[in-house]
Image (cartoon, rainbow, N blue to C red):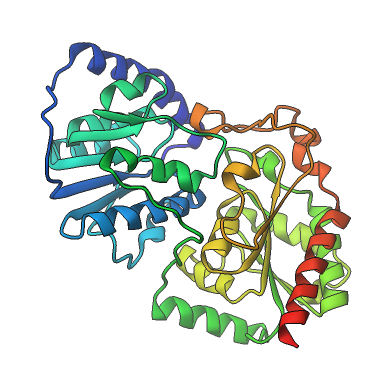
Length: 383
């Protein structure tokens, strides 16, 4: 896959021109479809956002039990749909012009309905335009002209409901209280069980997961490593915790540096680069508590039913907090001016610079206060 910055550049400039051309020429007349036998969902990007689409996809399936529902994804997020019974085919797209062209040619007007769950990418609307007879997407930007039905993007609510809003033109309204659990294979489970045994980690241990990284598009979402180290030492000393550090292989060195800042290094374990995405789903499900930046692993934890604390600065928790009852988000800014606005294509570094990132307003004691509150409730329930 091309670099994130290159993809964004090409999409912004060449994609906008393509959308303008298609919307002006009106190449295809819209004919209303009364029955959706074949449906395509487009969600091309991050793990976290893809997890947040699952309630909407479930609601769509419940309303269209006999329809074939496919999803179009990339290699980054395809595992979110592993063994998902609501989905027919998981179609993996490479984000380069040749692969996109071939996908369009093979699937030209194949689908009765395409629902574009991408918030701002132009290429997803172009794919929807060519592959769907009816098309639903968000109403902002020139890309909106390529849809047959649009919905406003409500940035004052959780993204779970913003995705559900795309179903309203179909007469589907749904209230949800939790995310859908992510699946893994027996082999994924065995690999993690063997790894835990190797490191002498028991499933009955008080495992606390840390998601200390963030996608390359916005590294300033990362809470400082030194603060994670102090928090880990507190959890180990007070609650005899074992700290499970997850991340991709590029984050392995960073996590090792974080561990070196700790006093109780032997009670922390760096799994970055050692496990695949589905194995991470299972590993996180074993945690009793998960604390992480505004990133994919935080949403994985919430989906797996783990008590989750999300740390926010550049993004707003009202949109992206760990979804589900009794999960927590920390946000210490004095205003609601987000540095990150996904629906506007503003997914870059903190507007105050990485060194002054908004997330740094959260202190170690702020997180400890929430952890102690959770642990107190846990002890009361266990009595």
